[in-house]
Image (cartoon, rainbow, N blue to C red):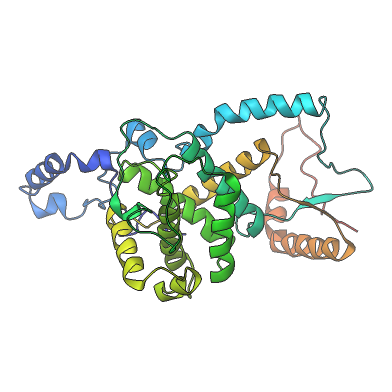
Length: 339
């Protein structure tokens, strides 16, 4: 997923506005002797003064900043919780494990479920469009579907005023992912690039530009994440009426607006994954629970034994340590066995 030492790390837009002051202070330090500066030279990412204001302004770069889609969905989520409670009379349909039945969520941060991850990403983009800033939002021509249509179908005059439904977003994203055979991790990276674009370029995603913004984010995420990336000409086979020149121009503008910052740290990826899970639960899109079968139980037991053998020496060292008289029981190591 990358690290903070990558050369692709770029400063946030707020920091970019103070470029001249940063350069002047850096040149002043160069007047010192090489003995004083040569050994203690900081990496360029360490010289970026990241404060709380910049972290909130650009959450797609910082793991501790809350995601934009989660904050935009809070108002609608409260209303949905009330309606669900009233319609279900306070009852929950969620499955729970018991002594005889165990349900497992077959979805992890390293291997997300493709179908439900795309659904969650579609919901996140839907909240971006629904709760957008209608006043003062800047629009870019490269993402305008009227100027750059994705099909030969005539665009209606009020194309930028029609509210986009969640199903439309899901169908569009699912079509691209199915045809290009992209992974669920690529969907999460797509959402990261999308929010990074909105903060860097200071634009909003609207009913008139959401398709081209998503297309540019998917195009870039597939090339960064997958080892065998889909070429631009391959997307022209999926979207029959778009040209390769248009795809190349879209990719170039997208990269320039991101300031070529395509690095995604693992902490940022994990933050978006868990925020998408939170969004799915509040929108009644919980990831599917599968009944624990005998074969899967045997695999878990084998993994448990493998970990038990791997950390056997560590447990022996822990047992040799002296313990206080207040705690004579010591540490008991019990292997987890599922049968």
